[in-house]
Length: 383
Image (tube, rainbow, N blue to C red):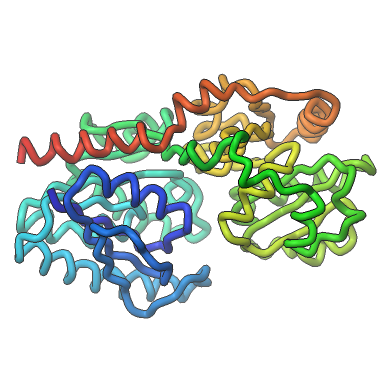
């Protein structure tokens, strides 16, 4: 079985893990990707990097021109691969442009189409009404033509059906999962001291030594709740608590300017995945205050719990379904400073234990991607 994966909105280091697991269940993968130049060292993966080659966040409105250009290139590559009989299934990971580009091959050559839906931010609250309407229309079309949908969180199937007034039955709910052989508290590779971490990342020693450390890792944006986190941190006056925010800044939050006047907070630019795991390992807690129905079992929360680090997160759809019943997860009203402060104090004053067994059962990337293989084989058998 030959699979074509379409991934147009960049490709993080963490996605290589997913690609490696998928590659175990197929003969060959043709990977079409945009906004990315990371190397791929998986034997049965052949990549097509779309022009222009970039690996950065593309600002609006330039991103829309890139997406149109990517859509045309992807459609032509897929049609060529389909005509040559090189692919049996198309799996699109960055909706809706990816899956829209796959429709000609799906219709003309009857190639089964799978789409993965993660968070649904673009459906819920795109800032421009006309573009929101366009994205919704595109998503609705691609869902109608898909042969199978893979969701990341339990609320998503019902939400999509209600939002688009669609009926579909062929879907699965499969969290991404993490590589538990690498990401676990017993992996001594991540046992560096706080001193070693602060030296690697140029963090002042007095900022981090003998402090309780809470981290945010991800896009520094309103959707991720960073504007709320700014307010809460400003109100915190505990001298032995430190906050570290890591990620690219969006939404004009002026986070760097703000942090210069806040002694208990440090902002770091995006850092390599390897170093992120070191940070999570020394942290006392990971924070994510995302909006309702914009997430799909966020990977950073999976990684944190897998490393044995407690989480403080929004009690919203997209988070509560997968994390709400795991010991070590403290879910709060994202707009409540009182609940946020109480959660910080609980972790600060107690030795919180994460339920490692439940994490292993739910977020094992190897077992979760075995289900992908089953989906691929089933679609091939009924084609």
